[in-house]
Picture 1: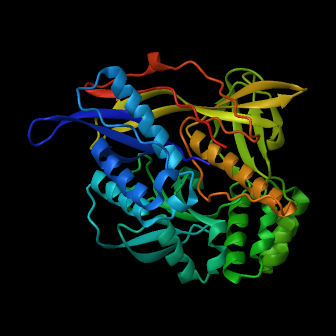
Picture 2 (picture 1 turned 90 degrees about the vertical axis):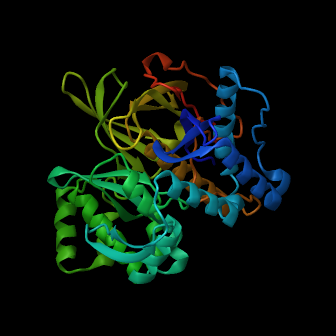
Picture 3 (picture 1 turned 45 degrees about the vertical axis):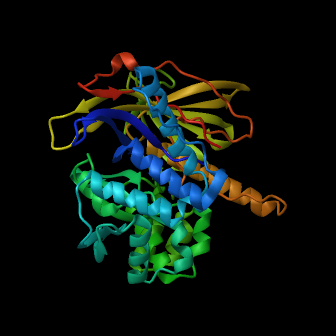
Length: 440
């Protein structure tokens, strides 16, 4: 699967000799990841090609004459496609050439030198542990350090991840994004447009039954227990009154195993809940709280007249989905140029034997997309295990920009009108409004 890379902004700059060049702002999951020149990406591609040869996707060609606006637009689109496609190969993702370049451009973009530092990692019980790192350490490396410190078995690292988490008023918790293995958490904390963010450790799978794979590791059980308690306290998981009483009794006894066994029966256990948002179902302007997990999207919908209803979309009925920038405004007031985004995720769903599009308006559209991909990945692994003749390798990280993700081999190339009329363009910047994705 691809990753959620896009280049919605480019800027014309002058070099030391007065020559013009274009600086591309590369975004990952809706957040500024780095700013790079074409020449830097071209050099990186040449290094990758020496290692991986012709299996790499095509790279946009050099132009030896001045580029027209159409040529510049085409190059930007091609660079986006390249970044998305090159991340589909797990061997490339794990290579030193890939990782070292992305580490360097992240540090350079935010003017951070490589040095020793301390980083607080928040556990699901909202307590933190401090680890000594380098500012250039990736999320994958820091996860290894944290796991060693808490005694988490190394072979279970793939079941957990580092997340950017916002702690709000009245104890509210919001998962902003999953950090990619090659992201630098120290840099991300100092570049995030979201206030009150911390790096948190959480499990990273959407199938609650996978808990059974972790029960032989005490540290893993501790983490699962902490997160289960937190999810119930935050009302992400919704036990009945009888279940709550039993869970509270087991919590007092500190019987983590029995607690987790009972938690499996709780509604929305192991789901990730998004912040309140709006949707177009069953009426435009309806409010919604989404919980994602266990192969479904569960929606608690508040209609414009105040009535509420629960709706569940099973992943087996989802054909594809698309994330779209409805409008982006370049903010130049702060110390960094950032994008204030309005996002939608629309998905095609089979209801009553006919396909319909449902639209969700949420700033967590990329996170939601990542969760949907994760559920598909887990289903693919299950399918491969059930059919030993199938050989399916699913990369741990999966993201992208033009977002048509499909569960069948037949791709659906449905297109949508761009929202360019809603986009405000700053001087010397090129901001593009419509982002689609094609994945599996």
